[in-house]
Every structure is written in structure tokens, then in C-alpha cells.
Amino acid sequence: MDEALLFSQNFLDAIEAARIQQGRSHSDIARAAFPAQRDPVGTYRKLRNSGRTVKLADAYRLAQAVQLDFASLCWQVSQAMRATTGPVAPGR
Image 1: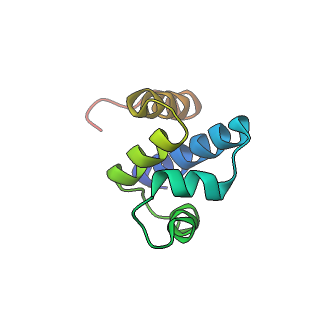
Image 2: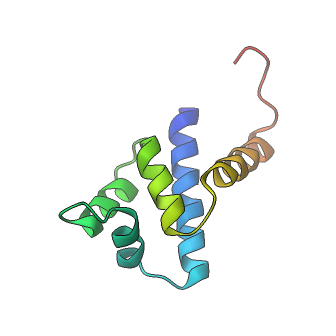
């Protein structure tokens, strides 16, 4: 699997874990992350179910919606990926 796609999926899993830990609904997160969208809940559903990479702006909005620091969340996801796959070979 493409590393970028795997990162996106793990990032969305981390958002979902934070949402659950906070006791918030998908709709609540969607409205917080995508307030300018005509259908924020549909936007979030498509993002979760698309199986594609997450746009940087959307990832940032989602991190803000669950009140997590975007850079720290990205680092945590990348470290978790590294722990499960081992160190990345030089030049990759």
C-alpha cells in the first residue's frame, strides 16, 4: 500500500479515536471541521469512506475540530507507522 494513503488512513483513525474519547458524534466533528460546506456531515462521510489520501487543509481542519495540535498529531501518526513497519531505508 502507498505510504501516503496509509498515513491518511491512520490519520483518520487517530481523528476517530479522539472523537470517541471526547464522546462526540460524527456530525459534531463534521460541523466543526467543515462549517462552510453546504453538507458538512456528507463531506466528512465522503472523506472517511473514500479510501483516498486526505488533503492537507482537510486534515488540519479535522485536527482542529477534535482540539488536537495538527503537527503533533502528524508526528504521532508517523511514529506509530514507523513502529509497525520498522525504520525507513535511507534514500526512500
